[in-house]
Amino acid sequence: MLTQTKSEALKRLNYIEGHLAGVKRMVDEEMYCVDILKQTFAVRRAIEKVEAMLLEGHLGTCVVEGIREGREKDVLGELVELYSLANR
Image 1 (tube, rainbow, N blue to C red):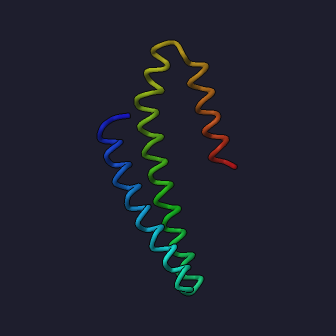
Image 2 (image 1 turned 120 degrees about the vertical axis):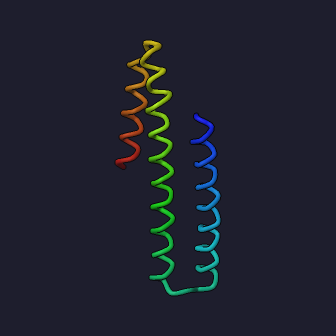
């Protein structure tokens, strides 16, 4: 993983962690359900952004290296597995 990708991912994950703690507080304080749901949707979008960033980094580094090293079948298998997981 590139240093910049790692740094950005950790920054975003810290943000998500804080946001999720806020959602937990909202539930604990019995806030209005629609307001809580809006916040959970925001957390989900933030997680999707982290996933996209990590996938882009993976495609640009690990996948390229794997193909150069002759591990096309393994690399393709991993990508198919990720695609399958993402579409459940």
